[in-house]
Image (cartoon, rainbow, N blue to C red):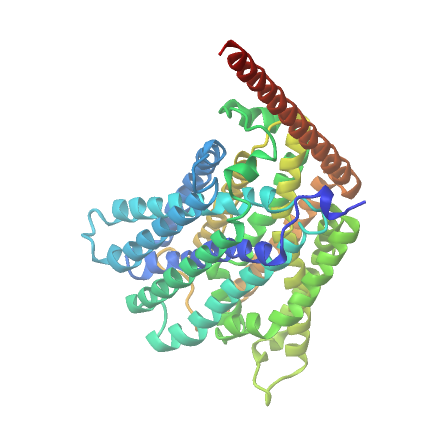
Length: 507
């Protein structure tokens, strides 16, 4: 039933290489996780000002998604639909990130805020160009339901490498080398590494999608429709699966923005555990076991469908996050250590639960990307329009709005706690207030987000059976179009032949 002839299959190296596009953007996303500390410590912006600026800029980030998605769907150049946006986006991010971290603190303080906003706004334009492709490009890589979930594995692997690698680099190399987040040289060395690694990932991602990102291949999907701005509203009204997926993913995104916020990490590892180096090492220590959990999730998705896999691991995430809450409430949480001589029971409990929890987070956060491709196929099935850029941009728009709300939420919480002029720093004294706020941000918010996700998934209709039906119908339509084109070609050929015969007889 699922032979290669029925699907637009891809080689696994193509899926893996294209997933490096996600790694390229997440390297910059990890870098920008420290921008609040740079803006506060180096540029001299207050905590409330930083939070307000970043929230506003993240909303601007969301607004740019529909515009770029609209441009992607209308692009039909010789270099494909996706690759130009990947390359241009990465170059723009590189230039703007270097300018941001090398020059903002040197600019006259009267125009420093305006300069920061303009440069960060330029970065957002580049980031949007590349991230829209990460979501929309899935629709052309493969439509095989056994292959699509594989991208979740590669995305999880590369995102863990991007975040885990940079966390180790910052916590165990840059912070000790430069004495904390109050030295501009820390940010400058960091940004140069990100620029180089992200560019390499982008080039490899372009190689991965190259054979699928050609005009003749894209034409096989369907006749390219004339895309109009009102198509966004039409999709929101009539494409129920994308609405439900957006709700599920965005509540998760809000939670992920909160629990992974740099400030929350400083409070958890640098204050509660009194060992900020753990924040980098934990990803390194748990990487391989976490991938086993992700692999299990991929197998569930391939056998039961992506919807059931997302629901199952969201529910498991709630269970493991609750257990993690009880682990972090222990009085000896500051004795966690990865030194072989100091490993104790609380360390084993923390690492074990972290592996299971992080695996569930990787699956729930990354499974939605190939599910966007399912929604894109459903839209083509429903309306006849192949609009992967629009679908990806629509998703990213709401996704980033919720990310902005997550950033603002952390800022508001810090303000209420009394951090008005400075953010929490590594080595600050431990208080009951810091402990309970950290537990709420790191454990409570994710549980609330996952509960909302489970509710919305009850109304998401694209299960394994439905996607098989959609895929078969789309292939029948595609085959019918090809046969009609062949017949038209043959008729034109016959007309030309008859004309040539008449000319010969006339002579």
